[in-house]
Length: 248
Image 1 (cartoon, rainbow, N blue to C red):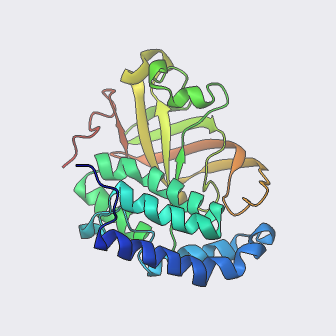
Image 2 (cartoon, helix red, strand yellow):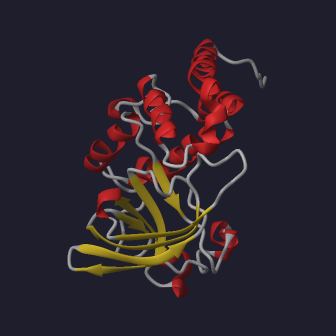
Image 3 (spheres, helix red, strand yellow):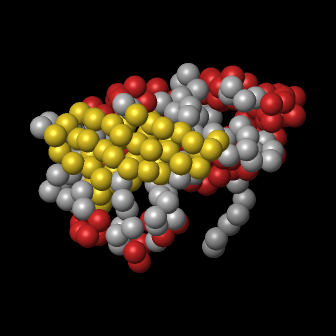
């Protein structure tokens, strides 16, 4: 029989998120609209890391809590009571780090996931594009609207393209970028690239979106990406990125 009663562990997680919201978010929520340099938001994310919220979905061996989607949803719901933008930023970060948990090698997980559980580090999923809009996320389009191109350059990858509306676009530690080796190949040419913030050679941001009561979530209208990344940070179906979901 299907039940909707939360377990004791889930109730404890809910209590943690509720207390965090009451203590850390609500007292300063009215100031977020003027937090243009992001310092107040940065402090909140660091505190969220300290109490274990940022690392909830990350496996235990990498410093997280290995929480389920249900538990993560419970936390985001409680955070949104205090500030929808805080909840959105953290949820977007969890979304951005999902490909790492799915396809990264053990060494890559050891390198990238622990910093996402501490220090207030966030992740950005750069997916939507001007040409395809939300169609890039439509499985029936088979990735044919992707225009961000990745090509091999020796042992490295070079990425060039434009994204729109990426959440956490200016304040992330890692960027997971949806790209393709050739749009005509559809799904067979699609891939995901993980770009550490320090490796971004050029990340041109335009038109910071001033969202009413949502300024804290960093979102740009256009984000042009040009970067050179070391090998083994690309996952997909093409011959250039054969490791999709098969990493140890």
